[in-house]
View 1: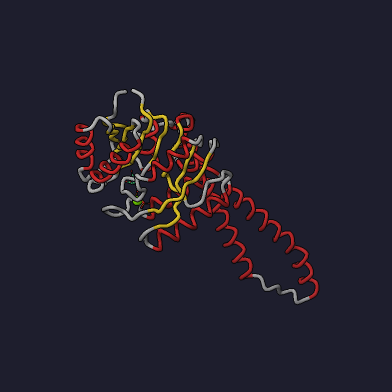
View 2: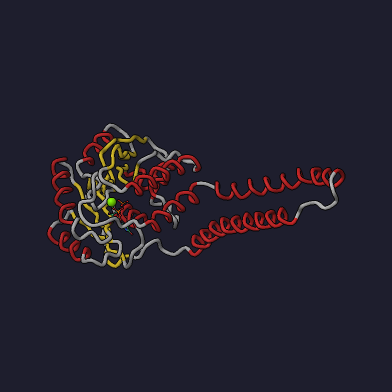
Length: 309
Ligand code: UDP
Ligand code: MG
């Protein structure tokens, strides 16, 4: 069957948002006059979302469920969506309706003009906590500054991608994933479309600080060696300072009293160096651990139920 649009929505405990998500996606996509499918990836929900997804799929062939054996995380759920999508254009959307489905039509317009990645840029964020806004703003700018790819500021995963792009992304099976970075990395003709990010329809965020921190680490380690370079920088800095200190110490030794005030300085120097070394080791460990994860080559996710075709 040929499908024009595949809409992917990762679902983690979104039972109250599911009916509304389905209703609005159906309304918008029907008005597009093109064929479409809604891929609901259940990321190990425990609130009954799984049963709700099955029910939606039973009543409508456009709904295709992919049900994970446990929670694998938002980024992995998006990847599973890519794997099962059949459309010529693939859209990723949040299940909580923070990304209004109506915007899909605007993304699609740009796609029809020939753009291959159309990402949605948040021009405004309605009622989000200042903590979320500040951490997000810092995060996007930090990533922009230290990574080697041009990842547009203030864009999330909400985007439309051409089949060509998704076929490339499907080959990138890295374990610690940052999908929006990956989709910037592949190149192609990209453009942003501004939209107003809405408030969550129902329920609370599934992204506690712990998960945001993990995502930030994936972004940084996945797209740059910056942390390793910081370690090198501190190595040179403290070695340089030590060399500079030699003539100073000799001079002081010859001109002032032989009792050089040294105890505290030595203690500070030892502590400082010890700290820098441990931090560097930790950074190195972070990369080595990631190497180990890749070497194991386990599947990215395990499905309990998935479409056959
Ligand atoms: N999500 C997921 N797995 C997770 C956490 C979140 O599939 O482990 C989904 C969630 O159901 C939602 C989307 O990812 O559809 C974005 O999550 P959320 O709205 O909680 O993030 P926020 O908008 O607060 O950043
Ligand atoms: Mg949300």
